[in-house]
Every structure is written in structure tokens, then in C-alpha cells.
Length: 105
Length: 184
Image 1 (cartoon, rainbow over the protein chains, first blue to last red):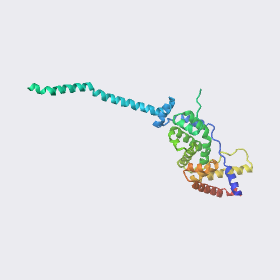
Image 2 (spheres, helix red, strand yellow; image 1 turned 180 degrees about the vertical axis):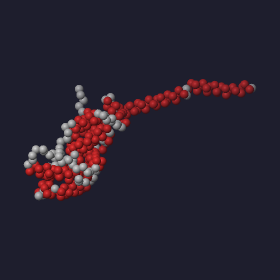
Image 3 (cartoon, chains in turn orange, red; image 1 turned 90 degrees about the horizontal axis):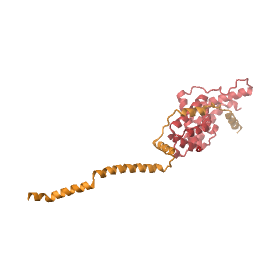
Image 4 (cartoon, each protein chain N blue to C red; image 1 turned 120 degrees about the vertical axis):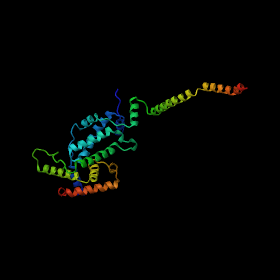
């Protein structure tokens, strides 16, 4: 037991010399020259953090963007099949069909 | 009015992940000495130890997403592992041939016999710890010198508590054998 205690005391004589006074400063300064790699999610978090928006805004913003996209896509579709034009075309076609035989007669 | 920054290490890390430089500064100032001590005991060289600590922090700053808050691991537990791994890599890269510096604590004034003995013990201990196998050295430094509990030390090393205790026992046995002359 004494041997163990003696051994421990001996081990504790191993002291570490102090680090340079400016070690922390050097590290902080060196970080200034480093470009941080950020994941897309962290980048988005950063933007929202800078704009001081709550986290829920992620979902709302995403929904908004998706809504805009759907809106634009739907608008193109409706414009290309205008109901009035379709009706006119049908009307002409129908009349033509009805009276086609009369011309021959 | 300046916004008060969060104080826990984990909160600081989350801030660093959003690019907050001030949080990084706080974290560095808070922990540099602790990790330098660990690195010094590993490398037995002040310059190498400072390089390792700098590399570890800069690695964290450059790629902060390596910290995953969902794993719920303490920052110190996680960062100890990074520093130890860098020490091992550095040692491999520069070779294990360089003997540890024994001049760090030598006082240039004339010494008493007791002081000479102390310095002799210090140099020998430093050398013997330096040349321990990596895992034994890591276990010894974490548990004995850093006074980390066995559970946390086992987590840092990624081993079971039994394996850790076995490594500790072997490290102590080796050192006792080498230092027996001073244990009489």
C-alpha cells in the first residue's frame, strides 16, 4: 500500500511546463484566415439566425416557396387551355358537322 | 445592448456552427490550457503540444459540423478524443525517435542534491511515459493526470471500462518497474 502511495506521489512530480502566454490568441487569430465549411442546413440556420427568425420559419418558408412554384406551373397550364376558345372551337365544329350534309343536298 | 452569449460548451458549439466567431474565441480561451496539458503529457514537447492543440481547434472551426449535438456527448469528452488522435498522428508522422525534452524545468542556478534528484525523476518519468504504448499512455494520462473518471475515459477511448482498467494496470506496472529505484 505504501509502495502504491509512493508511486502515486512520484507520478505527481511530473509537472507540465506552462504553455506560451499567447497560445489562445494565436489560435483565435489563425481561425480568422480559415474559411468555414458549412453544411447546407447550417447555412440556412445562419441566414435565419442573422435575420432573427424563429426556427418554425424554415417550414413556413419552404411551404411558401413550394406554393409559389406550384402556382407558376398551374398558371401556365390554365393559360394554354382557355375554356372560351375551346367552347368556340367546339361550337364551330358542331355546326359544321350538323350542316355538312345540307350543302351536298 | 449587446446580446449575452450562451455559456455552456455545447451552446457555444451550436453558435460556432452558425459561424459565430466570438463563441469560438470563448471556447478556445476556456479550454486551451486543459488540452495543452493533455497534449504535453502525450508529446513531452511544448512546441508539439501547442501545435496539436492549435490544429485541433482550427479543425473544429473549419468544419464545425463534425460536432453532432444529437449524440449528446459532452464537448470535453469529444474533444479529448480529437486531441489524442492528433497526438498519435503527429507522433507517427514525426517518428517516435525524438526523445522528450528534459530541459523544460531545469533551473540554471546551482542546485541542491534534492532538486537534482527531483529533476532526474522528472526526466525519467517523462521519458518512460512517452515510450509507453499509445493506448496505455492515453489511459494513464486521462485517468491519472487529467483525473477523468473511468466511464468518461472509456468513452473517450471507445473501449469498455474493463479494457481501460487493464490498460491502466499495465501502464502502472511498467512504470513501477522502470521507476523502482526511486521507490525504495
